Length: 96
Image 1 (spheres, rainbow, N blue to C red):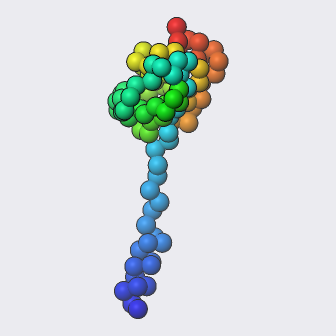
Image 2 (cartoon, one colour):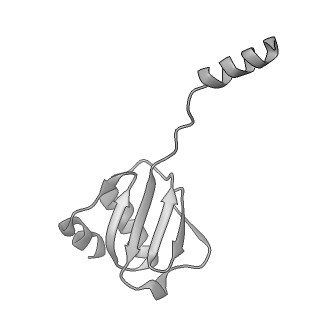
Image 3 (spheres, rainbow, N blue to C red):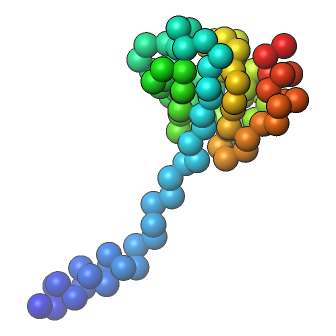
């Protein structure tokens, strides 16, 4: 009984494991989506159709991350990096 109480106390006291924000990109051309996993700046991108997602990645501004992804996968129509969504103007600059 005592061991059970100690185990329960440790479980409650343990800090929650923080998940890295997920990044996402919607490709203009799904045919350019890579098969399998592609590592870009430490983020492991996986695509299903035109939608690609990745946890983690280097600490960098979202517009730079977008340019790096667009250089490998082609133009994007939407992009979010670690919780920061790009505006239409930023998407246009990313694809330039």
